[in-house]
Image (cartoon, rainbow, N blue to C red):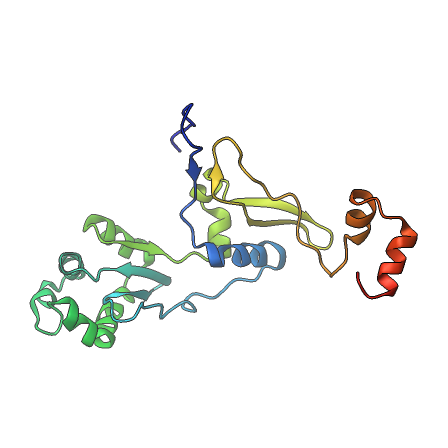
Length: 216
């Protein structure tokens, strides 16, 4: 990865790994601690309204996301598919037409992607400059060199599951990067003695009284 730094007199630089934030944490924890992963094909159907084609498509060995809803990009996709005539069809030639005929267009694309592996589809997307990307499950994130280089996944000790790998804090600031120190509490009040006693200097008697009154 290229080395970047913080120039004096300028605000700190933020380095944010480009990852699916809302899902990566649970996926990596489940995979690391429990060996649980979503099966291929289970993430199909993420189309944003009438933006077509822009969806997750089944390949021969899993799922792949393609976003080719712009006219020029769609034409390149049609070329990649070996069906350039689709780009000039009145059913798909314009953004509006593709939105109206989105379901059948997605079916046409998936008929094509399902005959190829993810690697084969990705190679064509790169060759024809089409926005696209792999759908990562937990094991994919844990093994990916880009995630490792960005320190997007960290190992945290857990009292039950041992070392658990999970999503790191972000964005990462150049001078004051944050970090994950430990996992969250397993039950409400687990750290009461530490917080109220060690940090707020409450006696055990005072803490017992608060507990008896249902305050803590």
